[in-house]
Each structure stands twice: as structure tokens, then as C-alpha cells.
Image 1 (cartoon, one colour):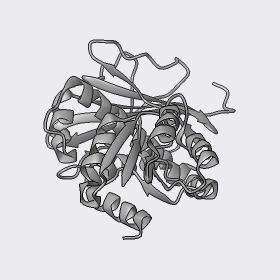
Image 2: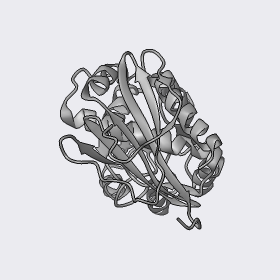
Image 3: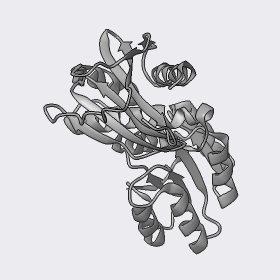
Length: 119
Length: 154
């Protein structure tokens, strides 16, 4: 299984990478904005994507749209600090499979990823 | 800016440390930042606010606080880059979390992090900035909130 982690914060990317070791992803790649995520997605074809929303160049919701246009089966978990209900609803409406609110903890991430992988 | 908004920021700032850090932070009573008040610490992350309200939200913290907090999130070394990144992520998280109360019309930018000795930009003369002082494990930091209604005439 392959994972693509998208966040403009280096420490968040690294925290997610560290805390999904239990899930046994064979390969993990990192992207710092939506545009890079889309580029990575095309070549890497990950099984799961974690996606921040507020990022430079291309925001996460735009990236979700773009990825799902190319691969309607993409599995995307939004990981964002935007705590209003309408943002979470909008993300799910656009096709993301889950929404995890920041700040994340190892436990909250584990639960969200497990749910996405149906473990 | 009403007191209720400051309470939301205070709660979100305390909530960040309660969830992430090894021990809670104490957020003190907000006060007005006076002109020339030099309270910027080593790292200051600035978030631009647009939508129904406009202005800025900042998180300013000394290097020592950020270096002490990094191990709590799994980082062994407190490099300058990681300290700056963490300051930005804290500002982003607090500003994003307040949308639970203020709604999606509280639109936030990506953070811009300023490291001392670079000067922190001064707020416009017509804006009022509140300081929410914060203490975590003996380290002092602050959240600055300077907001106006978008249709408000100064």
C-alpha cells in the first residue's frame, strides 16, 4: 500500500508519517501543496491520501476535485484545522472519505486511517 | 471586537496545548496592545483574516517554548526551521479551530512566519489589537488578535 501525505507544514507531514507506521504502508511520499499533490498522484497512484486544506499554490479542496476527476476511486482523508461543520460537509460532498480535525494526535490519526482502510 | 470572540481564541489556544503538549497552558486575561509595546518573541506567525471579519491573528513564542514543545510531537531536534514551522502550525490551528464558533466566513491565510531579529509588521493605526498572554511550562507566548468587521468604518 502507498500513502501520499499533503500538508504545507513539515512537522505535520513528519508527524503523520511517523504515526501511520502501524498501517504498513510500503511507500510514503510527501507533498507541500495541492499542486504538488496532484503531480505526485499522477505518477505515484497512492492507495490513500491525507490532505490539508489551507495551503499555498493550490488548496486542498481544489486538489481533491482535481484528483477525483482523474481517479474517482481515490481515497482521501482531509486533515485540517478548519473546524466549522460546513467545511467538513463540503469536503465529504466533494468526495473525500474522511475528515480529521487538527491538532492531530497519534490516536485520532490512527482511528481515522483505520476507518478509511476499513481495518 | 467583542469579548465572546476573545474567549473563543482563548479556548482554542488552550485547547491546542491541552491536546498536543505535555501539560496544559494557562491563557491569561486579554489586554489591549499599546503602541510601541514590544512583545514579539523569537518567532511570530501571522495569519491574514478575510471574509466577514478582516485583520490578522498572530502567535508569537520564544525559541525555548517551541524547542520544548517539539519533542511532544515527536521531533527530537529543535532546529530553526522546525521552530518556525511549529509557530506557523500553531497559528494556523488556532485560527482554523475558531471557525467552529465563527463559521466559514472567517477565512484564514497560510501563515507567514517572522523570525527575530526581523521586525514584525506594525498593525494599521485604525486597528485594535488584543493580546492573549499564554504560559506553558514556564515559557511565555501570546496570541494577538486584531480584527474588524469587514464593513466596519474605522
